[in-house]
Image (cartoon, rainbow, N blue to C red):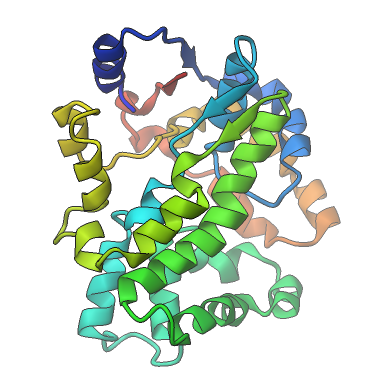
Length: 290
């Protein structure tokens, strides 16, 4: 959340607040420890702020509440593209085999479009490639329950993204610092309540999480409720101009990649050599609060 919106909450409730400024100089040398504690093949850069925020919070308490779960449990903004895809059907260039599943994977933009280029041919074949991913999603779309398409998307998001990504990375990064992080929005009662709500109460036109916003309108300042979804932006592209790129080149050298054998080495090095000077300086800062 941007500084001015955080200040609205701290001023309204007169709470103490600590800013943590996150820069490569503060975490590059600790990446091995962060990855060791993560212990999962999760490449989300938000794990670094998760770790550093947990480290800061653990100095004053041992249990915290976080806001994870709003998007997967209450119809976040990325569902809109899938709702439109389901409404209009496959485009002429879409493969009719598993087109809905592939649209889902493209929507979340987690390297799906680059999969065949990133992995070595042997690993791609052994893993099943794109078909292995669409096969995971197909049972959710074909299931009789839930009937409403938005609720099907929410079931996917909660089971796959929530249980296997969001909750895992937060739990790993917080427990590494002796901190227990509890997500109230991911509680069983909240999920059950959300799933029985009509879809239009969660995604009201282009207003995502509508019922959640309505529920907190007397608690959260209106500008925060009205603001578009921005996420927790990590300026990786800017950081990659210098220090982070040097670290990546060291970790992903030709020798190491060939020894590992999982990746298409030339393509990875094309990514490492990408010209990041096109990204503006406004993307340089990543400040988080707790």
